[in-house]
Amino acid sequence: MDIIRLKELCKQSAIKWSAHCLERMQERDISRDDVKNCIMNGEIIEDYPTDYPHPSCLIYGYTLSGKVLHVVAGMDHTSVYIITAYFPSSEKFQEDLKTRRER
Image (cartoon, rainbow, N blue to C red; front, side):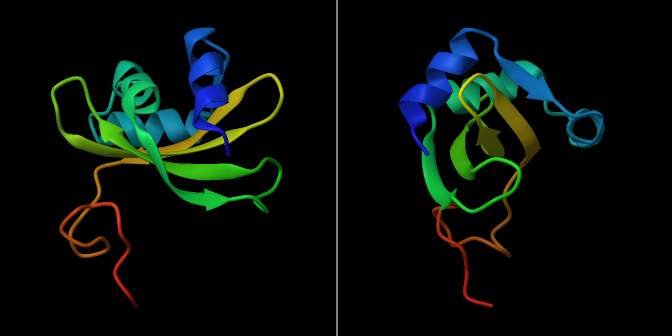
């Protein structure tokens, strides 16, 4: 995945939000602006090129208030698809909240 292209699409507001994703974001108190901030200022920490229906990735970034945030996003030629957004835990990620723990 190309973070530059993700950012370009985000700037153009070419973002598709599923009802399921928006529901989970509301439960977790994550705003659309938090997700956009994560994409615009974040970095890709995992790549999922074979995901269907679009290749996707895990983005590490921050909310507007500075909390670490993970966003899973897919992309095609015209849109970014927000799959989910969550606050990472040290149970699943190492202290840097970027590296997955071994299972």
